[in-house]
Image (cartoon, rainbow, N blue to C red; front, top):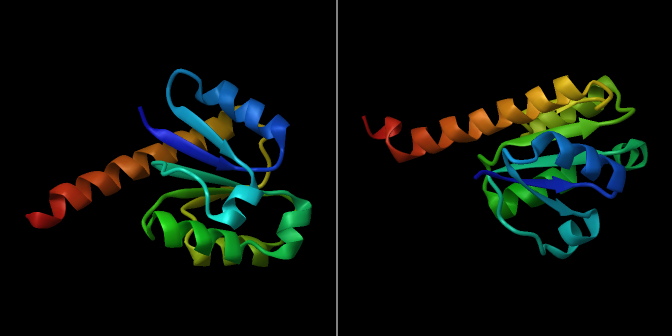
Length: 133
């Protein structure tokens, strides 16, 4: 079962994410405090929640920190609330695979998560054998 690591300080977002990933994936919740202390587990994919306040602070550093610990190719979905076009481009340039601005549409949010899982599957296949051919 694939592991999803959610970085968020919002318990409501965790509950919603848990509900739409239940029985398909193992969801691990981590706050940004754990990110800052570098104490969080390995996962197959990452979801990073940038609420309006965190978006104002910038998305660059947390993304770089996660990629530094878990590897550059780790698929990341960024939830960027209230972000400008520049904030979104910065997150994408830093290495997130995809983004969503709101989770109001649960089907769209669930699809983004499933797409991220597929990216992880593809990357593992590529690393384990396709590139050897």
